[in-house]
Amino acid sequence: QVQLVESGGGLVQPGGSLRLSCAASEIIFSVFPMRWYRQAPGKERELVATITAGGVTDYADSVKGRFTVSRDNSKNTGYLQMDTLKPEDTAVYYCMIPTMRRPSGYWGQGTQVTVSS
Image 1 (tube, helix red, strand yellow):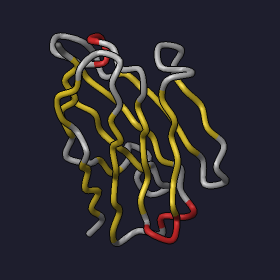
Image 2 (cartoon, rainbow, N blue to C red):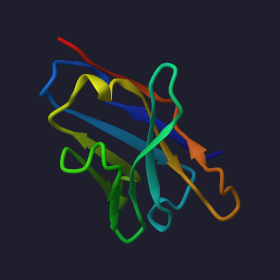
Image 3 (cartoon, rainbow, N blue to C red):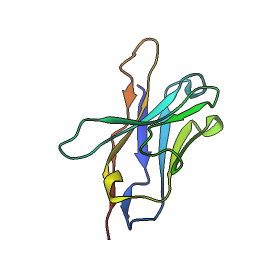
Image 4 (tube, rainbow, N blue to C red):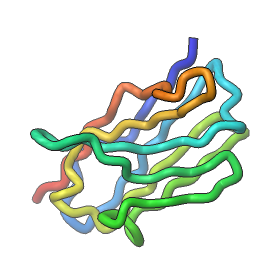
């Protein structure tokens, strides 16, 4: 059974940094893209960043220049480095891997990121 396990969330002051990790198991991690979403209270889920199997990245305008998505295929793990965090980045962050068999994707459990002084 495919599992995505996230870690790295927490409370950070504005301007600070966090790195989220998403460890995948029971999936050929290297051949699929990975996406990071977030959902703030009362708001719709938002696509934050994408990294293709080949390492091409894309970002939402709201995080461009501050967030960096990466992957280590040898560890079956994806990362979201978040710098210069703002209070509006506060949300639950989810990693997701879409596959041909499951276009809706496999999802992590979510990790809370709170940016507050």
